Image 1 (cartoon, rainbow, N blue to C red):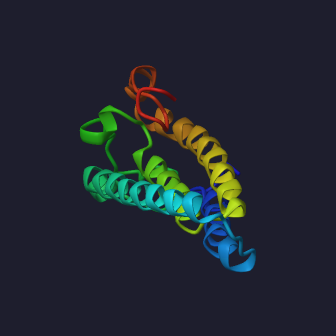
Image 2: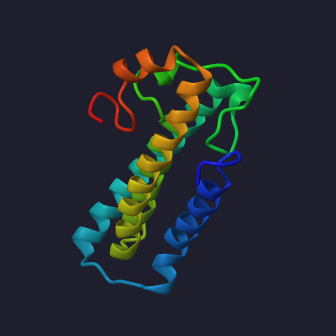
Amino acid sequence: MTSGRGEFWVVLQLILLTALVFAPILVPEAWSAPVADLAQALGLLLGALGLLVVGIAALYLGRNLTIFPKPKPDGFMTARGIYRVVRHPMYCGVILCAFGWSLWQTSLVALALSFALGVFFDRKAAQEELWLQAQYPEYADYRRRVKKLIPFIY
């Protein structure tokens, strides 16, 4: 799991995201009208916030952006902008989108997969941080100061 650029993590991530997208279609559910309406509104807000977070994070990553968790050999450490409040804003944004999608689709199965995706990103980030710390000595101090996935909390 730690060899190469982290291909295992990418494949597992794609499997989880695919399952999440198709869960509401494969396991349709009927929520009551007031609950469904509230869930869908909250889902749209979370999804929009998640997309915004991912977009901002991508801008700050610039040429460092890669689908793989192992940093590029010629990359640089990013600790500015959104990276001042959360170490893995891309993962945070995708998790927000996942919960947003699940609520918008009113799918308990998708919600369960969103939680699984959160656990997955926590583990993926742990591996990524080993690589980041090996490549950037200043990452250890950054890691002590900035929360991992949820700004100011975790």
